[in-house]
Length: 177
Image 1 (cartoon, rainbow, N blue to C red):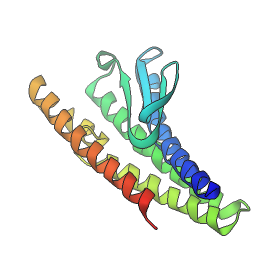
Image 2 (cartoon, helix red, strand yellow):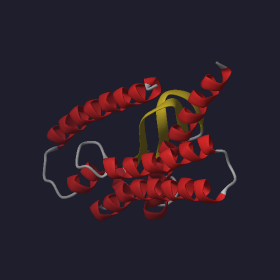
Image 3 (cartoon, rainbow, N blue to C red):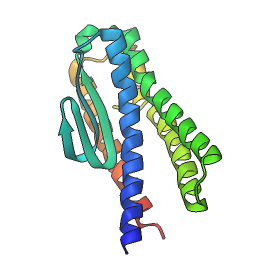
């Protein structure tokens, strides 16, 4: 039983860590493009169990975001910020894949690392879908001419759909035998 609990906690930690790396990719792009102080919050996972400065980390890998001062970036910069998260996910996938290939570890850990590599590639691809509030939507949104109310409505509906699907997938993955 202790091994199962450890495995579940390690799996959650790897997923939340991957989500955090994705969000840190966005935050780094904001910092480079908008300068110090533009990032207001970096959040990965829910519900929140740890807070430190701008960082908020949760236990379930259901959601993440970087809140920043939009007035400090152009639409072109917003597109770069949006792409930076998926690029960070690809880099994390590569790190998991390389670690699985070259580090000495038992078959179970190797399988877990390869699964995390695939999960990070899937996260990168999923986030590029043009569904609010995913990164693909942010890229598309910079070219759209919707009024503020319509954009806010689309973001709320999209966020609800993405959050619900994320929770469902996380629970499904945790209960698979």
